[in-house]
Length: 224
Image 1 (cartoon, one colour):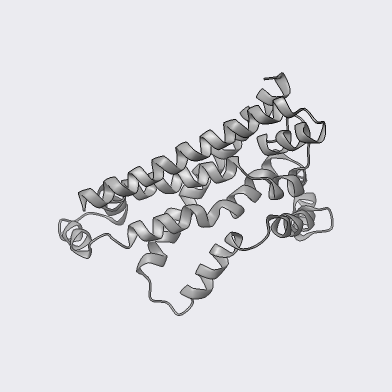
Image 2: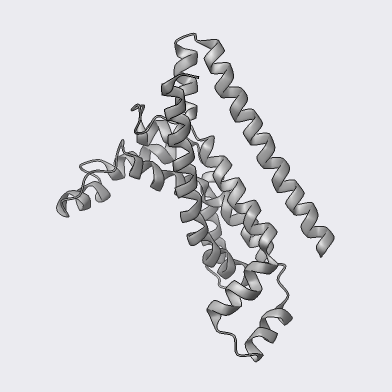
């Protein structure tokens, strides 16, 4: 592989790692609340969080580009604070990736948290465990497979992004050119041997991720 392709792979893995970490920090408390609440606003929040599953990536990318632009609300805010813009930057890609991959992390966590027995939590409360201790010592260990599956899906989905990445990040080598964009470039230039290498890499990675998720789910069912 060329230096450009390795740079795209490195950038993609960094984006996926950062996005997955942020997604877990956001989705773990949100999923726990959604799994346990009976609020009448729950369907609306679930619909909003799941919207990227059915929304064309270019639509999400377009509205983020408008928001991040110099005349958008976020763009105007960053200008007022003296901060650099987010459009066509790695930071902007991180935000876009978190929004676009949110349901792929949230849904497995909701399903996993929904299986936590109330008796386990009540026993921890009676023993004087704080809310943080209940989360780290009871809930998360019981849902280890679900958390790993959620992280795997979020990471893999970020690696395979194209539409959102192209809209909000463009095609800047070393800054926003991900694997999917590099693959597109190679096809555009009729470099099918290089395109085949990248495409095969993505296929193997996607298959390995799905195999891991299904293995974790099967293992969790056996333990239950």
